[in-house]
Image (tube, rainbow, N blue to C red; front, side):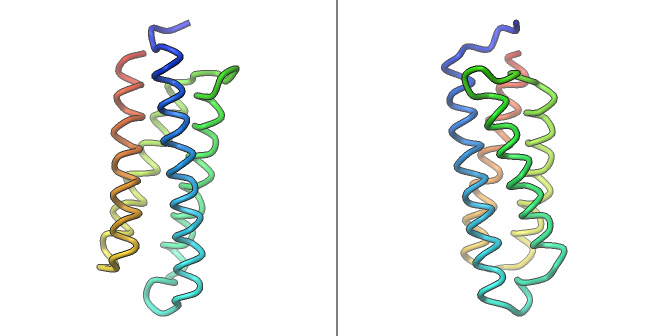
Length: 114
């Protein structure tokens, strides 16, 4: 087992779960709004990021693998998705990008702690 506490893992799981929801909500928003924000590459990035965040949430949850590789993969997915959201110039997607950056930062902190 690594040196990351259960409390830190719970915090990471909570953040990843919130981030997965933010991505899923952003997918819905993009599809409903249409136009430029409904670009298929953005929607795919958001969907993939939501899946990666859910996988990381499960890994960090009690009884999960606590995998540093899962946290790093989540951080990378969040980084890519936040950049795509920011490029749209859309206010709601900017809020999603902020949540993504926070999730990536926390996942990396927990990876370094491991």
